[in-house]
Amino acid sequence: MGDHGREPAACPPLVIRGQDSQNGLTGVGLHWFRGSFHVTKWGDVFTYLTELFGEPEHSDWALWHYDACMSWPNGVMVRYHSHECRYELTADRFSLECPGEAVAAMEPADLIAFLEKWAYEFDIRVSRIDERLLDYEWIITPLQLDQLVHEIDPETGEVTKRDFAGLNSYSNAFPTDGKQLTRAEVQFGKRGSKGSGSYLRCYDKELESAGEIRAVCWELESSGEKARKRFDDILEAVRWARSEHEDEVAAMAKTIGQHIGGAIDFIDRSAGDKNLARCPRLDFWTKILAKLGGRLTWVTEHVQKTVDRAKSYIYNQVVPSLAMLHEALTPERFWSWLEKTTLDGLDRLRAVHHRAIAAYKVDEAAGLAYTGDMLPMFDAFWRENAPPPLTPEELDRFCR
Image 1: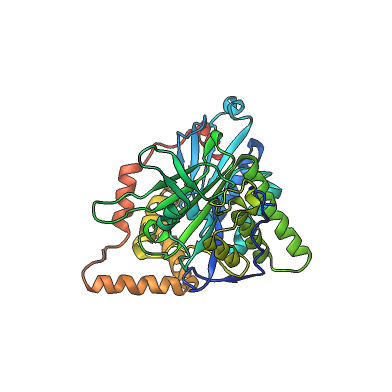
Image 2: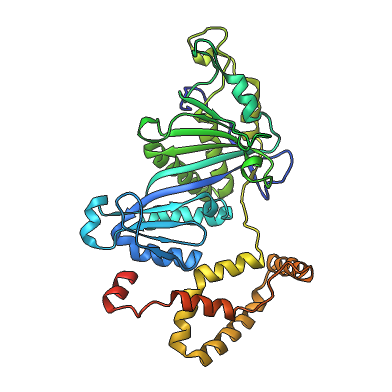
């Protein structure tokens, strides 16, 4: 049963893998993942994340009682303590943060492997998970939703219409720049300690993505026990599908659809029936639940590769390692190694890389692209950032 006492949304029988531009389809996916793990897992966690996402950046500050953090290029972050004397501040646990940029970019099979790794090897204690539904048909917009299900008497300030159940609180946001909307969002439920563990947003994804994704997004943010329960639901569905030789991605999508469809209901209270289960469901929500029972596409948001983005990534994430190799190998050996390594990489270029190269050359011909080589950038970084050699104690602390 859903959180409001009704049956949850129907189970989608099929997941069509693909991009979020497929017309007539409804997309589901994960968009945030947070939890904590025991300090004894930190070495294995660091190795795993570095192999998966590249080298992290270290900071000597962090939130939530932690005093250090490692952040990877895609936004994944681990907050930890620099010394074991601080471990008891967070019950011997470090914090993992996987934002939408990282989670939504994973292919579904990779995401399943990622979640199972955290559940079964790192024994994560999940504290937040965001699941979302993308409606490309715009069955209802946030502004229409606001006008349909909630009204306030302008004179008394009393709520005169409240046609939803399952999540008690309601708020909205429709700011403008003086000419047009810059954001369109309706929220149900509350975040934090005063909330129920479920917080649902309906927002204009086209506005939020600057026109890249034309859809209305329904995003369910779960915290605390509900986050742990919904995380377990997803893994259990995958395990079941695997044991029955069914589609694991379809099973994951089915579960997410049930979570979103079961978190809230939109009903017509005008008849005055106190038994909410007898109140008729609003047409738009009936249509969305039907979509959850039909064809779905798993939403994967790929970051477009560009030459400038690659240069920025190398400068921010890779250059410190190159600088280390430069000093360790001597300049002559280093540049010889770098040239050979780069030439070896030509065989690994994919279509997405060739498209980025072609786009860069078009800009270059138009005088829009920087044409210098990497040596000035490398030298500039080294002059600005060359630190003194690490002491043995500092090296041990960094690698621990």
